[in-house]
Length: 446
Image (cartoon, rainbow, N blue to C red; front, side):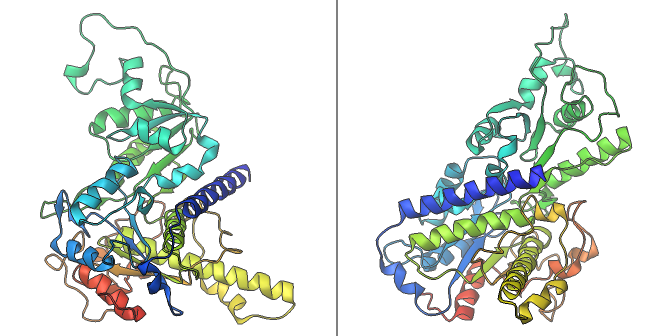
């Protein structure tokens, strides 16, 4: 219960921060506001790798797509947020990179990285945390609110006898003394590291010693200290013809090693990033913020999530859509009880599958009961990334399920529900996806 209360508190702080930023940055009505007429309003969630870029190379359809998404003054016609499972940089850096590639202005408030929801996990912010990944992980952690951060490099320097797989990195001549660090309270896995063997070894050391890696291993230290993991992508698409290993593959290795050594399952305090619900909750707050900046007076009714990975983008969007339906049903139930009358919506709650704690990713199962949430989230699969016409035939009937050849590429703690990998729409590229959305909504694109 304490964890749930802490998450709710963190979520309220995050929500207030987003809404406050929106009000502070709200601009006077511009030509963009003309697009908010009528009963229909929607927002767009874009994946990046495999949808807009392949590695460092821009997918040609992306630039024209975004030229159509802004007006003559460079203002977006609809709320746009970029939701990526990448996490090896700061939001500002990613926004600048996207602005350069797409030739439209992208603000950091439009960018959501896999670790962004960690801002709401305030109960860990004062703990001593070990961070794993690459890039400016220490800066990223501090930016998210963590105050006492230890990197893998700092840990191996403090305990020079732990990292010995690479003979060239072993201590030479005399054995240096250990420096000693305060005990590690939690482990934060931001993304795939460069030296997997070093990170795997030291993380296992920390988990089996209750955060004191200079002590002897003990399988009695179970359950272990909290582990929070961002980005569960098993595979991702770069310039190569075939997908590359993602952080999800690193997690598979870590889980297998921990299980092999201890006989127990590695446990996660939270799994963050697509396809977890908490990621889409955060993205919806950013969409709401963008809508307010556009001067929209009516709430966004529909979210369209565009991605290339059936197990991350499509699964996540569909899971969030189930969550929205459950929240809507919960709200209807509450209204029916308070009004004393039956509500047909209240009876649909049992039709929505219950989500596991891993799938919620730290989101409250009751979030949205009193919020004006979107009515739904629709998933759009493009064929320029992990899912490709060159490797898989598109179903002749769009209602048929795309199941990644029936192999489950999702995380161990997520259930394999084939219906969740079935996109609402399948298109060739991001330009076709946006054109289809505007046509569906009855809005002029040009």
